[in-house]
Amino acid sequence: MSHSVIRAVNLTKKYDDFVAVDGISFEVARGESFGLLGPNGAGKSTTMKMIASVSTRTSGELTVLDLDPNVDGPAIRSQLGVVPQEDNLDGELRVRENLLTYGRFFGLSRAEAGKRADELLEFAQLSDRANSKVEPLSGGMKRRLTIARSLMNDPQMLLLDEPTTGLDPQARHILWDRLFRLKEQGTTLVLTTHYMDEAEQLSDRIVVVDKGQIMAEGSPAELIRTYSTREVLEVRYGSDKNVSVAALIADVGERQEVLPDRILIYSDNGEQDLAEITRRGHHPTTSLVRRSSLEDVFLRLTGRSLVE
Amino acid sequence: MTDVAQIRRDAAQTRRWGWWYVTELRLREMKAYISYVVTSSFGNPLMYLLGLGVGLANLIPDGIDGVPFLVFVGPALLMSTILTIGAEEGMYPVLGGFKWHKIFFAIHATTVTPGQIVGGFLVHLAIRFTFTAGVFYLMLVAFGAVPLGTGWLMIPISILGAFAILTPLAAYSAGIEDDRGQFALIQRLIVMPMFLFSGTFFPLSQVPDWLEWIGWVSPLWHASQLGRTVSYGLVEPLWLTLLRVAILAAYGVIGAILMRRAFVRRLTR
Image (spheres, one colour):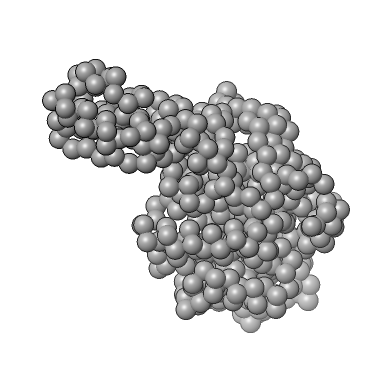
């Protein structure tokens, strides 16, 4: 058995003329936490569906747990936990029943499913809602229930498609905490996200995808090191002046990105550059020095921002 | 570390019962609307039998086909009730499973295959139809509308008839992307005419010749005539009885094949 739990070579998915995933290659190691970062429509979810063995690839090679999804789909799925982008909980059933019935799909006996459901309700901090209906649960609770459901079969690998989209900051942090615990227990996590902070929080390694292709690959720190500077100075002069001022300070820092609302100056010492700009008499209305992030990496690679 | 052979073996064992797990889920879901199922199972036949059997029957004192009107109309009422539920179950519950609550996608993320989802869906409905048709049959018996001991065969016939209309509709519903009133149109242009022109309240021979074809393509007419054969001994040539069974079975089997194909297509694209 190879070391990789997922191996994709020139993986391609086409819908008629539209190429959703355009010949991507990557590997994921057992126990690794692997993130697909990219904007909406980049092909992340389609890649995820092929890994989840529910969408047949158009061409290329793909093995999951050393099995071919086109041949052994159900066998692969027996080892996966899937958290889809949109919750698809069963509204006709109560919270605990959602877990029980799901466990049955993996062949668990009723007693086993019941025991596991209680453990996972505890894990998902939903024990007190066991007999509630699904509908009144908050977005964060529904998400945690979906994650609990995906763990009913004690999966070797958990696939999370945009796990925290639409959740408030507190709910996101609770969810990240739960996912981090799974990571610590050795569960392989594969997640897609268009949030850079989420990718940084949860992923050991990231591939940046755009328009169905991989733009870059590495750990968050490596990507930032390779494609960005240590710091970023953000200055604002008002939307009508940003472009003209940018031309006058083009030699400051290593590189510039002019966005409609601000100028980003990539530099190893933001404070020093801010002092230089001010010395030249270009006083910004607001300024900010921050660490480089994956957002900057994405901007550098694609010329676009992640959330548009 | 689990090896490939072990993964395959474990999954194969689970997979054998995939269809039953789906049935189990649907039965459990029924708990949420069981009062509706029970009330309508009793209420529907009661209203029909009182309205038509006691009311309309008075206008037809000589009966039809040599039997009292209630005996003539009883099997067709049972069939039309079960077939109508069959048509309903083939529409919104199928589209909803893909488009709104997306439960079919949730099930397919497990070891269960699209074919097993279809299988479990149909088995659950067979159980539900058996219950509703069983209640209807007992009420017919209570009203003295089932002279023959073979009358109970109306229950399996109604399930055959319901599947004849349900599976082709479900195959269609599984392919719908947007709800643009298709189901209302089906109700008005297929289900309602089938109910009116399928020899339900009067023999098909009373319908103008140019409308008789509706009866021949309608699962409801074939199911009703079979029901009459087992309920009061309607005399028809054996070949015609067998042809009716074959037509219903053909609708059901071809429909189920198309339904499975539509589910596979929608779940694996």
